[in-house]
Structure formats: structure tokens, C-alpha cells
Image (cartoon, rainbow, N blue to C red; front, side, top):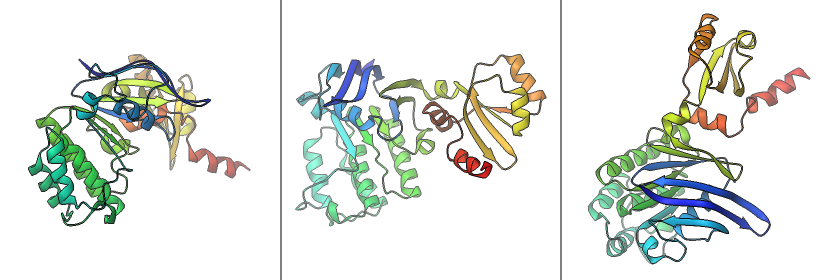
Length: 302
């Protein structure tokens, strides 16, 4: 069953098209990762789903409703981002009290325990917190509201590695007890991939992939050997990413191999392995020739 559906949805600002003809269904009660390079429209998509902005064309539905100016969607949705602000007159304790009054599924005990764990004093107000502590408080609000649709747009900005790990762990544990539809956008793909069930990759104003993490990984293979060996035995495959680590070179290639071809590569001394979801994501979003390595390689050839 779908919580969110888009049919030919586009969003433009004046003459600039940010998202173009999106068609997708986001499953209900699933954690979906929303990933893409900077500026591809991830935040715009989430704000349209939240009902904050209106699509320019197409049909968008959340829980069967058009989200823009929908009271039903607003009452059943929480949108967390790093730009959230709260009234200066209210302390963190006051904010929890107001959340308890407003959100039907709010869990006050969970919120209080998480604030205590993350060492967030209830007597302070939101604006005096450090960047990382503000993000942590916002994330706690997103978890404790237990809204049927919860969206986190870069929720870990400013958090240290330990806080990021604990946030993902808390989100997963509460989701397992109280399933809901969660959209999670982050540039730290390698940190959140174990949390995700589905992943949505936006590239070039459109959707380049939407499916399970496993399906994304299976689109590619990693080949590792000396570059001369790869060029001799693996040059028949489309290379989507190259990287060097000492004497070894890694090529990430489209996974269109037969079993016999894979065995031939192994016999030639090439290590053939699956890729991580973060490697597959990088391969899919245009880093085809080794990224920054090519800059230095070009300088060395001069």
C-alpha cells in the first residue's frame, strides 16, 4: 500500500525546472532514503510532500489527499530539517509540553529519556544550543511525535559521529515498535544504509532509481586488481567509477556479467565483489572517472 504517490509531478521556479515529471509510489510504513547530489531537488520534493509548497504540474497525493493546505496531511506529518526554529520564550521543557498537547501520538516519556541521554538541559531554549545539539533536539522531536509520515531532511547536521550513530539507532528501535512512513535524506549514505529498506535516488531533475537497497547494490560489481590487469581482462565492461589505492585499482562496473565471465575475471587475479549501497549511489550519480583522483593524475602527466 502506498503512502505517497506522484504522477508526472514537476516543480519549477520561474524558468528553472527543479524536478521534472516524477512518477513514483512510496510504500506505507517503510523507511525510504532520499539521496542525490547537492541541488538536485531533494528538499523541494520533501517540502511538496509536506504541503509547504505546491507542485507546478502533475498529481501529488499523501494518504490520498493533495497535501498543499491540507489539514489532514498537516496533522499526520512531521518535517524535520536543520532550519527549524522555535519561540525564544519557550524552554525545551515548554516545547515538549506543547508537542504533547498538539501531536496525537506524542510519547512524552520517550522524549524526556532521549533528552536526558543526549544531555540536553530542559531549562535552556532552542536558540542557545550548539548546532549539533539543536539538530539532536529536532531529531528527538521527529522521533517522539510518531507521526504516520515523518520526514528528516539532513537531520544530523552538526552532530558528532557518536550522536549520529545514536540517532539512527534510536530511530530504528522506535520504528520497529511503532512502524510509520519515514523519509530520510542525508549526505552520509554510508552511515544510514543499514537503516533503510528502500532508496530513492534523484539525479538530473528526475528519479534514476527507486527500489530496495539490495536491488541497488546488485546493479554494480567491484573489480580490483592492478590497472594493467583490469585493462587486459575487464575493458569490455562499462566502467562507472574508477579509484586508486596504492598499487591497486578499483573499477565499479555495471553488473551484466555471466557466471563464466566472472570466473574468467577471477582466474586472471581480479577480485570480484559486491558493492556497498553508498558505492552504488556514487556510481549512479555521475562520478564516472575517479573523481578527485583524476585531478591529480592529470597534474602528474603534465
